[in-house]
Length: 262
Image (spheres, rainbow, N blue to C red):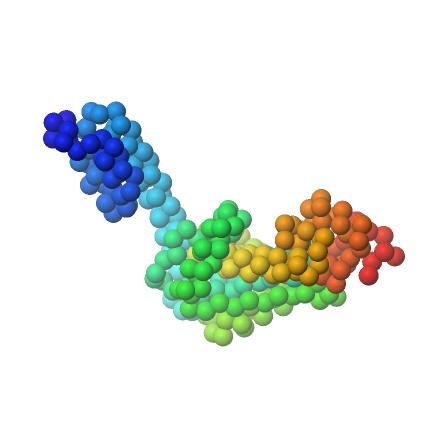
């Protein structure tokens, strides 16, 4: 068997294995798995590990779509998730996404498990394939006035309405809110249900971009880095400078005396 491969340089074999797609790699592994050359053996081992990782990832995403169909049924299904609930500045942002059964968006996951660059790529792909996307922002003053529970319900209803469609089922990450008709709540849904994961990604990317814009309007508060959460630098800026109209006064009592708020 070794003689059959000796005419193909080991470096070329390794490059072919490294570049092979998931559909191609099995045939190459079978072709070279008995090659005795050390460089080829190591390349085959790497290709096998990569193939197994990629198959597991595909199976994970397929399972998320199956879970979406299982929970949502055969009608129009919208996934919903929020970002910014625990921040001390910036809006509460909720996104609603209706995904088709095909094509699948490979790589979708809970936005917290994805690097920022990967989230941006996936958000763009979701925008390309989604049947509908809705966004709703609740500003800080309204959060202070309404309280978070009411603000969250309003944001969910607003995001679903913004899709422009009438869903037969709304799958939402977390515990029951009673925000919209046909609501079905899924704990850890952002990691297990395709449309909720898509909503989590789009919500995160949308709000992060907004916080970067606010950083330019309110320099010195570290909005771009902290995304409005209570980082050490953000807290220090609040104590040194006071609050802006982008801060949630009701969330900032531990950082500043009441008489210094503005």
